Image (cartoon, rainbow, N blue to C red; front, side, top):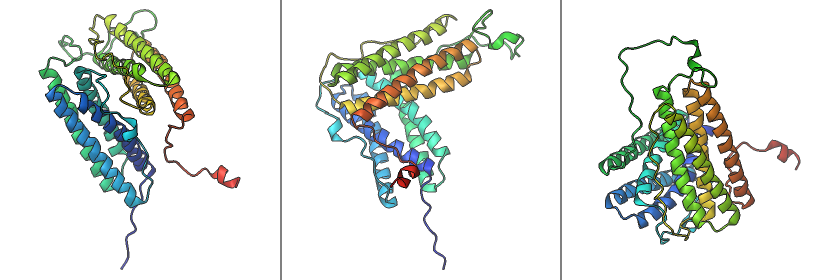
Length: 334
């Protein structure tokens, strides 16, 4: 009788699982701290739900890697969090963070599902996609019930379906510039929101960081986020579209670090990478040339910042190496 050999993990499956483990081990630390500082019982229940998802993911991937005889990433541990540290972020920010966690998770898991072949991996990411969507829905509903939901702008409904008549539809750098369409408004709004999240986190991280070099990067990240919020908001205001409300009361005056510099710097790189991906999608969805030019400029700045953060992670030996192909040239040198 023929024996079926087990199907090994593909490179895309390893990439998704490895990235999921790293992200969830970081999120587990962040959420355990939030759980200990959260004062609103409704938000606390949602933090518990999100923490349960991260622990479920970590358990599945750990067992899978053990069975595959694949090395489990080091990731982030109890050494990277002090759950007894004083409150650094407000309850409002934590709810906002959970909503964004659900939103970015849906994007990551849909990509992972679409690039997976093995049925057990597909089932895992399909489950994650559903539960992360549930996290997003719970956070959005709770935000609305507390009067904290920042809705995208409304527009007046068109009276009829129309075709483009002007050849200068894509123009925006010179001459007659058409008003923003709903796709462009959507991405300007969403990128303003994510940069607001980044700004608030950088303010908090810069207050508690122990390393002067790391602190400088957080301050630089704060200033970049403030600048990007202003650029994106001004593009909305130029067409008399309201920019999202910005709240600056989300960080306390605590200077006690709840997280290691390693975790905070890794989180910062993750936020910068998320921003780069968002700008890329916004660029492809925006027809006006001035918008594309702005996104290219902002993307380049975010990319340089992410590179500098990664270099500091490497200098401190905090940058865990993602699995890759064997370095044949190195082997050949003996």
